[in-house]
Length: 347
Image (tube, rainbow, N blue to C red; front, side, top):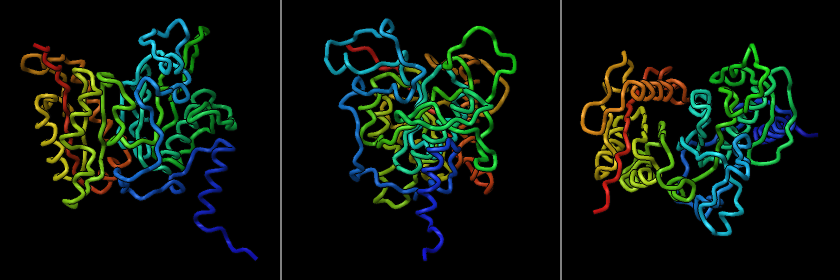
């Protein structure tokens, strides 16, 4: 006579039911140890170049029509790869359980946002939650079943606040217009976010073309306290140069941690980037009344830019799971904001 199901059985049963019945996933069934070795072989698949990456299963609402595709190369692999009608612009590296993704989605409804996470179970949780939120935004009164056709598709069940305290119901339009509106234009539809299991320490340039990203978020990365583990930190002088490679001039990289030593380490890496990044002073991104743009040649971006940076910092502090945990524990959060400097012209 069999006994009660063990933890592994319960976890598998919940995951299968969530996928089959469209339920919002429960975090407790997707927990995974925080430490992952970025130098080990994780059997990841990745494109040889960004032009060979098919993003259409991740962002089906943004697939380009044939007339919108601009032939940029005669290479056969590029010609046969399905295209989106816009580039990915925002990356959350080490997205965890996706709190930042869901907070940024309605704020930037026309920008494609990607969460990158190395842990398998956590990536699966975020993927399932995206499916549920998309389905809820599409039809709040219906609980759809999942028929999964790709890495991400239109699925799942309305969110339950008791299952995910960090998720609020997506906004709906109380007075819909008779004119058809593309899902990409509706804030809160969550069609503009996706998640990918990836090792950015190895494959970041394989995913993003040069000067394509406008924002990179590095929220509460693993501090790797031991000196011999510092090489595994997601911010280092070598990796900062890769972040600069994929960022647009004027793009912003955000860092936040509750470990002061790690904060000083990340600041040192960005300050020592050889002029690739300039530090945005705290009086710009701290919450305050709007003022004129940044001082200094080429830095001034105006009140609108400063207000956007302040809002990004606020979301990063308050909407991520780790940020909420630090607040509950009365901890301190150390923030860094870094602006990508335009490369000098060739002589």
